[in-house]
Length: 156
Image (cartoon, rainbow, N blue to C red):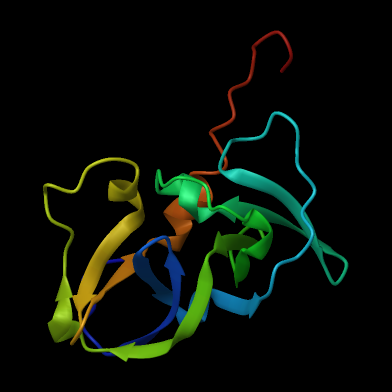
C-alpha cells in the first residue's frame, strides 16, 4: 500500500495496546472466537485452522506476527476474516473496533526508527485526535505465516 491520496475507510481492531486498521475492501467479515484446530509443525504465528461454514480457514495470531507476548486468554480472540488470492484468512485480534473514514492528510509513513517484526507489517499511521491508527499491510501479515517453500532436488 502506497501513501493514500483519497479518503478511504479502515476496519479497526486492537492488538495489545495498539489500534490497527485494514482497508475495508479486504475484509470479508468479523466474527467472535471460533474453535481452532492446531496444525503440527506449522509456523508459530499460525494458531491453526478453523471451519467457517464449511470452509477451512487459516488463523494467524497477529500478536505473534508483531512480536507481542501471547494474550492471557487466547480463547477470547476475535477474527478479522480477510479476502486474499489464496482464499480467506483469519487474523486473530484482541477486540474489534469500528469502520473509520480517514483523511490522507493525516497519514504518516512509519519512522525509520521502527524496528523488529512490526516494521515489515506496518504501512504507516493516521494521526487522529486522541490516538494513532496504525495501518496494517494485510498481505504481508498473511505472508509472514506461510514461509517460502523449499524443495529438495531429490524429491522434485
